[in-house]
Amino acid sequence: MENASCLYAGGPVIKKLKIGASIARGVMTLENTAGGLLPCTTTSAVGSYGVTLDAGTYSTVQGDTEGVVSVDIRPHNVIRARISGGATEGTDLTTLSNTSQSTGGTVVSDADVGSADMDSGTVWRLVADGQTSDEERIVTTHSGGTSFTVTVPFLQDLEVGDEFLFSPYSIGSDGNGNVQTTAAFTEANGAIASGTGVVAAVVEVITRGPGNSYVDFVNGDHALNFAVS
Image (cartoon, rainbow, N blue to C red):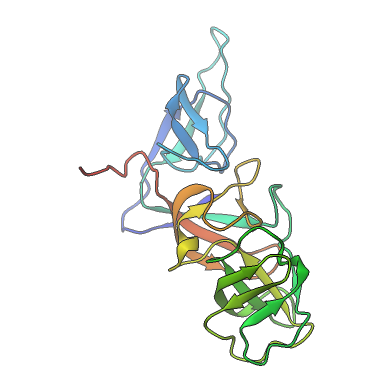
């Protein structure tokens, strides 16, 4: 993960923060416990100060150098994560090959839609090179192991063999509310059900190919996003 931009103007605010466990670069932090920041979990970044800009090593040995990481602590940073096709970093997204013509342009059919509920996620059509998209739609009905249905039709009929990609994330729908990380916490898991993971606000889903699509989001549980009562 990396900081792609910020919702508000102004330069980075980089702090050196103490850690309570070893943390890799490009990982969201977790609230300060065990003597310092921890790496996030796949489903929680509560009390996060942001994404690490470098790696830090933690030690409990007296006399060792104290572990710290650099973090841009602005609470409205837009974090960019590659969307992985599973829990393992670097996995390609599943490519769907449409198995039934849809003259209305609303139903993408393929058993590979799987069983994880993608309602409110995004499905997008690949163009001939298989690496870019010409249009995307929000999934409104997921029939497990069968198809995705969208309310807003694709511009053209969906023919047998047309290729699509999908993810559980979207902007302007229920898929806006969460982003789940992969096992090493550096990418977004694109194979989980929509609406699970770290509390987040999706800013954009960058719909490209199986290995180079991304989700941009703001962490909703940032330590400096103060609650107002």
